[in-house]
Length: 117
Length: 488
Image (cartoon, rainbow over all chains, first blue to last red; front, top):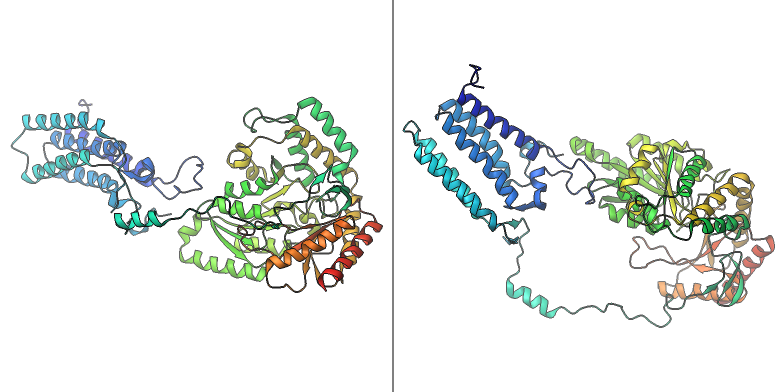
């Protein structure tokens, strides 16, 4: 990867962080319902995967792992980008976008009605 | 807030904690003075956040409970359990039932006395039909009695597939699906399509199995007055206004209308052409329950769609039980392929109940054969219904409820005494009088506490093709005498 001059080490790390957070946001906090029919008569139809995980119980081990992994990735990325200001902004923004929906206060919250139905 | 602690995520803590400590050490080792202060503070906050996360307990998000511990204890102390079986009086109707020995065919033996059957739903007289019995016996010798398994688990026999095929061809739809219990047919079909958040408009006189299906579906139920299309239109218009306020929600809500062809509780017919017009105007799907009208209405017995000349593709799902005219057990749903196929995985009564015993499926096939070969029986049945309807008019103190071509009429008291129990007792005395005179009638029975709109007590008179003119006249005069003597 270092043979391509565009892909410097800081850029690669920022890209990794951003793409990881984007994909995590898409799969855990955007897509709602289930891909197959469940016997719960549609209780989870309007819930995202994060809200459905472990039946809505907060701070289970799966949820803790999925919350900590973007933070670890962020710390690594910020080290490798040598704390550059632009990279810092991009990485922090991305981290916030993926940490805030995981708070228990944001369970079932849809801001500005986006993604409600 | 009342958290509910969910046990043990503690074993995960140790390794995670170790990872974080190692990371922190690496950081300190590689600490570079170019790191801006705000960044270090942010990283510090994040590390603290991770530590807090690792030590937080799991809890469920629950509503607040405003009771203190003492109040909870008090409530528990003063609670008295209700008896498992509530005490009932000795002459409660469910405690004294009539015992039938032998088959409930045209001549039925009730409580040891032979009577003419005006109570069983044997509309086409197929219960005692020799051909049907022979086919069932041959099937019994070939397959045995039961199937010992649901459809997906070695419970599908060739007779099931043949019966589904024959029913689809008979009703002129694309596909049909068989259930092993008539009550469970519509009660499984409704929750397979209608889920939480969906809206179902249903007639007030819907039978108990429809009510249980609606309860299982967890949808919003809106009742409209019996056979009142204006009331239904009013509800549909209100829903339309709601939908316009919130079009994104409306796009994900499904809307259904559930009606019966011939209602069991009131013996009248639903206005199907008007319903189809409303369907296309307000975009709702129609579920038609045809238990009483399958094998009764229409020129060839195809039910209320043939009776009104409505195109069968306009109705999204037709559900019927085979326990009335077809004189078998079980039920079926028929409609378009993509609608019926869904029930093969989501119809609870289909996937999780043993399939229909093959001898009953063979009996149903033979009954269909008879119905197809001899479509005159339907006009004979209709004639007899008209006869009975006419003969029962003018019974003193009672009114006849139902269409003139409905084979199961209701006789209600013209003026109720005020209490349901007294009415039921009076009607029971009329039934007893008729039983003495060897006419078997029955009271219409309901689970009083469970019905949503409990119909008034009535006697149900059933017409079959096997009753002769003399039988009908005898029954009518017997009922008239009974009414005169008991209801004066």
